Length: 288
Image (cartoon, rainbow, N blue to C red; front, side):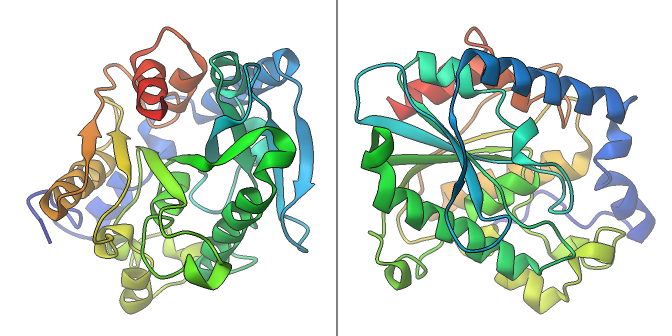
């Protein structure tokens, strides 16, 4: 494992400070209002099929925004962040209109928030959602052979957990069901969180955290990966992305970093809703 980028830092107070995403911006509530407003605007422009059940649970739901171009179309599956304990898919569709206009369907997943369930349960939910979409893709004009996943923060962790080997066979999926991943400001080795304030709802010991750390579960071969982290983020989130990038490259996986100048932990995802942004253009080219 490549370990040039420190994820633990000098002591526990430093870890608590550097892994505190909310405190990294001057006005967290303003960031959330913008996030929700951009999602509402995108959904007003791009009506979708909402609250489709992918499983029996109350939170086993997803929203599908079909591509406006010819079908079957590739799909971008988006998994929201919120440190696994907050946010909802309803506020997480800012990219729906930009991608569907460009011929890419968008699917936004919901999952049960911690601590109502464990993180192991959430990973199973996300994998079940992918299995459901693979089976039903044609019903929504989606090409099941071109499923890509994207996540922000905790959502990037969940997206990266789809890269691991071994779970696909149990759900009757091809090993390469995910053709690519975009990770924004992700958490890829979550062992350093075990003693921090985050563990109040994460509730993991270090052995469990290792079993849920994508950086420790890299596949033998894998899809294309695009990673980005905001210039204005804390060292913890910057190091998480750089560490994961180095680990993927050392494994021989096709991975690239996309610069995100002037962006913070929360507005980086909004770039996917702007057709003129570098992150949108790079993601669209990678899907194509």
